[in-house]
Image (cartoon, rainbow, N blue to C red):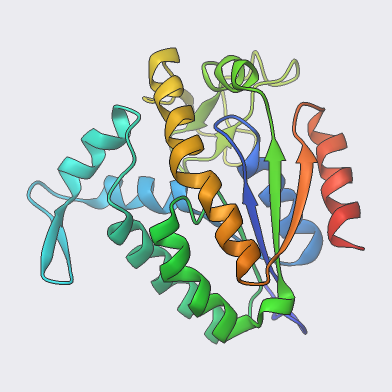
Length: 234
């Protein structure tokens, strides 16, 4: 990936199943940005973790096995651990002169308060935009219960008529599998977490001077992207 002349930060937030990762990937390709997907960072760290592995932050140990159990139950992992992984990645990308599009991060007010000052320092608040994808809970449940990820790179595949019968990932060719957190009861738990813990992030970012753009997520992937691109081009 080439360096961006004027690196931008685009944060894509929305409820479970709103296509955050898909839209972020499209933005990354179109605007030459690095797609920093928190879920992918988590999955990769889970994949390489050995029994008993932990990350020590502020004197406290965060055991990977315990964090994985939380995620599988639809509960959110410890914010300090997520913020730690994300901040390290931001610093590395900034040194390379790359702009970033986030999907689903920062997910909590804690993460926002940890990550936002770093983003403002490295990129400038005028170069930061938040895209908030709006979607009804029943749509989230329907979409999430049907989506899959691939075994190799953990790409998330949004459920549509075109992808319904896919068995292999169109990006890397590996087998598509159901996500462990795709059960309706788990999705409902995640929706509650989104309402209680993520929506306050929007108000915080607005207070920090970040531009907020709301997008109707109950459209086709193409139409959602068209609206997002129009919003960030104004």
